[in-house]
Amino acid sequence: MSLGVERAEGEAVLLGLDLAGVAGATGSACSSGAMEPSHVLQAMGYARADAARSVRVSMHAATTSDDADGFVNALRAVVKRLHAVSEARGRGAVVDAPQEFS
Image 1 (cartoon, rainbow, N blue to C red):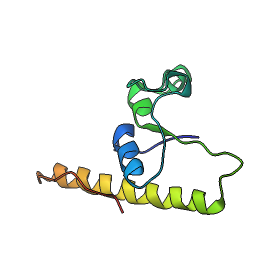
Image 2 (cartoon, rainbow, N blue to C red):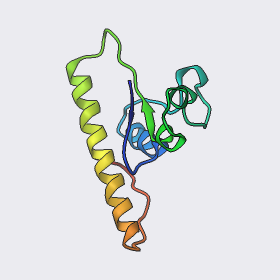
Image 3 (cartoon, rainbow, N blue to C red):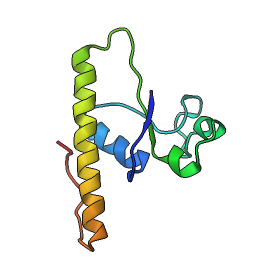
Image 4 (cartoon, one colour):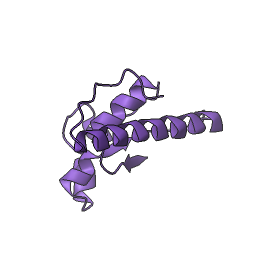
């Protein structure tokens, strides 16, 4: 599944998810490891900036509802923190990098 978060770069979301123990990636699966936005999303008509906000996560047959709930909770916490940092910086505040997103 690929998802994008308004006002947050995919790499920042990915870092927060990683700190929360959730694995994911940015970019397309066929160019794993590339630092460029997903060329697949761009080919589908998404703007480069929108593709840069995307994060890709995968589920499989062994994924439980608890796993999915954990992902949603981690994502909510990450987005809340990133938006708070963005708003604080918009007011001119200096914000230290968070140690965790929970």
